Amino acid sequence: MNNIVLDTDIFIDFLRGFEKTKRFFEEIKNEGYLVYFSAVTEAELISGKECNKIERKAVILDLLSNFSKVPVTNEIAVKAGDFSRISNVETADAIIAATAFIMKANLATRNVGDYKRIKEINLKVPY
Image 1 (cartoon, rainbow, N blue to C red):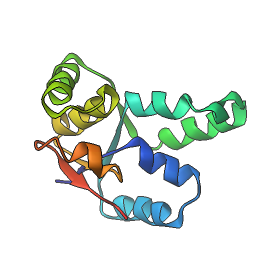
Image 2 (cartoon, helix red, strand yellow):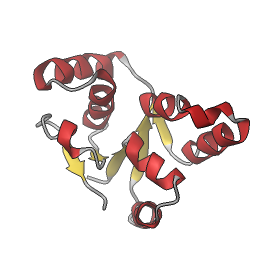
Image 3 (cartoon, rainbow, N blue to C red):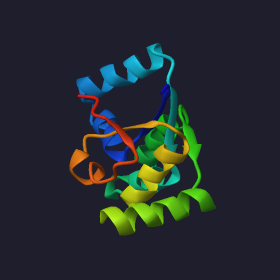
């Protein structure tokens, strides 16, 4: 599977300057992954208080522009509802998981605790 969806925590780590995350971004670039993120991830990143500063918001939007945003389609919404109900995960996480499922992609996350309850997705713990 050469598709990957990045969870919000991976972007947060990158924005914080974590070297392991920078290396992971290089790895997925060099290995030719098609890299996606959910529109929910964009909302989560922009909702941070630091985005009150226009410069910080611009940095986030610039980072995201390097990857493919997946909107919350009806198919993703329905699957997310199933994931949330059956696996008892928060709606935002269920939407991100459903995005990975529909895109036939691995989900790169450090948030294994919540996502491991969703058996239909493949997790990739990057570091």
